[in-house]
Image (cartoon, rainbow, N blue to C red):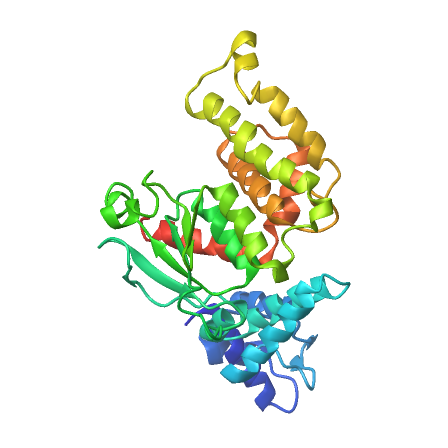
Length: 358
């Protein structure tokens, strides 16, 4: 029995009792130890269940508590998701509470309904349209799969591998909350197959196909998607895009080049070579980027944007694997970004893929 199922059962037992339920009774009904029960009660409280413990008597559940068993229909879930997305997209004072509410309700729902609410509804491991080894998965997003006329021609297909820069585009797509089909390719096989080379002759991922439009290169994909789906608000108004473009492509150019030269190849350019390289020195790149994020929640203004996805992903990856030296400015900036629900969904996908031997 999964913990989520067990939590739901604990609440059902408490609802059936008019008075307090002893910890021993709750533990016995679930076949768990008292220590595990105490941990489960703590989790329930964390997700909003109002549970009171009276020493020597037992636990009581406050009347009217909806968590964790909401028992919503798919139509009700879609309506809830649509409303939350509209509030989040409005970027007003209720945007953050709406995102928090989505997380809390998702934690309280059965897995299949939680996936429907968060827009991470994946359709199995069917063979993809590109290559025999490609796994095709579908994320409907909170808007569902019915996108009206032209849905077939406007299909958004995302070509990736879990252990690639595709994880940045994955994060971008989850932040957008739109429907897309994920095609997972393998290095050296389906990634080099003729049908995928027709999409990206470099034989690399990520790439996207949006209707008849094909875009490669991670930063270009992020910039395109932000413009293609303006309702998500991941690109500032044109008049305010100076920092947005600057740092998005700073990370794609100088940062990636400098880190690759130093960390991957062990090349440390001298002063003459630094003058010839577009990235200069790694020290100068990191000093510049640290100044850009110091004391800031977002890198390009007061709102989250695609530039934060691209810069934040590179910094988080570099800090985790040691290719970027630790700095307090980087840690503070990444900490806020890594708590975003879309980022955490992508991280869960990556961990699952790694567990399966990706």
